[in-house]
Image (tube, rainbow, N blue to C red; front, side, top):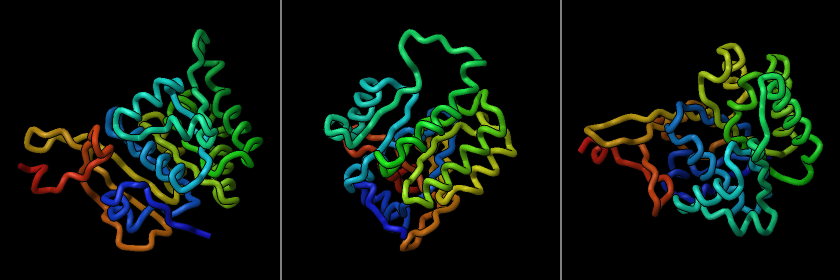
Length: 233
């Protein structure tokens, strides 16, 4: 059964047609610096605020991630201390990774998620690019299938991805499998740097979805909608 939760940002909720429909497989795709991590953090904050338990798998270490997100108003400290937010950093201090080691990352993470699925309500991977870079195609397809099975069992999955990190065939399958697909771009409008957010699809929304809008990252509001007139000013 689909339920709608607030992202805690009313402006973004309106763009999504009323909030975030869960459980869902959510794919957030964009180039480096396009705002993928910010959108993922907003969705994570919304899920935690709704009482959900979240497993966050990040390229950043725990302190770095919490400090970085706190700087843009998403304070995960209390959720982390209360163990509602479980963090699993992909980079281990002092560890040396080779291509041979890296190709096993995705299968290991996939098995870990399945073995511990009763301990959380959502999984956020920011980003999947590191996991898929050297993974075999069969392992990536297996991961997508496992994600869909988790969603069927009520667990939401949020993935961020760099479009060039996955071959087009796999990327197409992942986009097709997603319940919500958001594409981001960094654009400059009249000398102002903004994020272009395109909601390619979102299944289960309860209202009208705004398929494209502009936003910027704010230390006060987190992600702030930029009206077209203002972006062009």
